[in-house]
Image 1 (cartoon, rainbow, N blue to C red):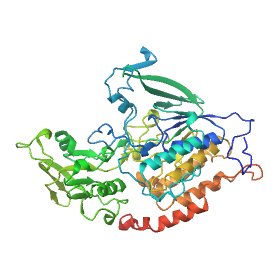
Image 2: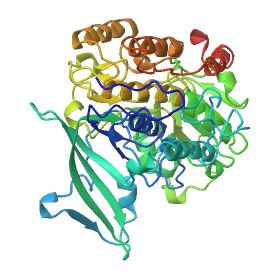
Image 3: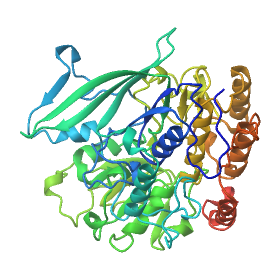
Image 4: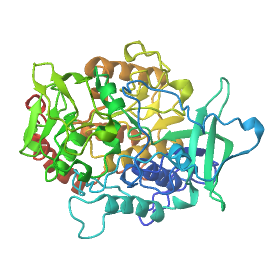
Length: 512
């Protein structure tokens, strides 16, 4: 086992030369991928960070271009199947798309969900990495530019930039039966001098793969009767929250928000001084945000039963003025009817998908019938077969960062990244597969399936402490520096945040 020298004055945690570093691919350069890469580099591993965008930042990078429209409905995980993925590489090592194809960069790296005025909803004292402090004097809540700058600061301070490949999308990750390495296929986009776009393809072998992406890419659009007809007839009046950029297009309009979680609350706050009425449709879910946290003029309505259109003389989108509501009505399951809705914003979250893991993702098997190998089932509502929401039980050389939610995000994901680094560097040993499987099955029985399986709403600190005890259990403290995890100041700040802010955030059934 390579050892990490105990040297409190050094941030270099490279293994001793007695063991050659392993080659690791990290997918995604948001905070999860950047911190994971930084820890892997510090622990002496040979890393390549893949990022399809031109910069690091992940969901905190603002792109004024909206992403491509999702399907209506969009409820199932799907394989990567766009024009770029269908290129016939037998014809050569580079594919060229003619000048004027502005859709190619969007296909290769779809813009994320960040909107103009996005700010953090977790205090900076809680939402931080062990690798870099926030600048002195930073407020508790920051705008997306500050957050993106912080992520890039982590990258620059920890030699991440030297191993990052931007404008590079991972197409496929597979380990063939009997193979010892993962085959990673990627495509890199570059714009040529004549305005055309060239995409080149590369296939490489890696000892391990860390997935730090996949959670805010594929919009979840529920299958509500009639919603597809509203979208088809009036496409600009129905959108998923991922395409929301600012409230200006909704001036004085009545908006129906479908969903009652954080994104719905945040968008409602941005619409408050611009929109007419704001309706919030909720199914009464376990993790709904308390309506008192929405703007005062928000009216709560129940679950939508159907969207209806008036077909007689119904105008087309082009002839509908800004002041005219959609000519139809929204019928709710409790009998309520709305006939004054100008626009619908679907704030129902995202499907969890890893399209590059095509061999571990199923579009036909549902979560109740997941076997011991599948990672994503057709419902795309959870990640299966992970130990501690990190390590793929059948083959722990595949690891994930950022799967849990209802957590401190940056701090937790930084923590997970260092855990992965210590395991891959040989400084911590995973339990046997049978032990990991037993724990996973026990957790399924306790929590059930779907998104609640990954919630750390009241369990984040115990989750980290349990992992920390395991990681440090085999450490020779005379030779190897134990992993510290979050510091005492973070624990104080987190307890305050948990006991105050979170106490009134959710609906009555989920209060702290």
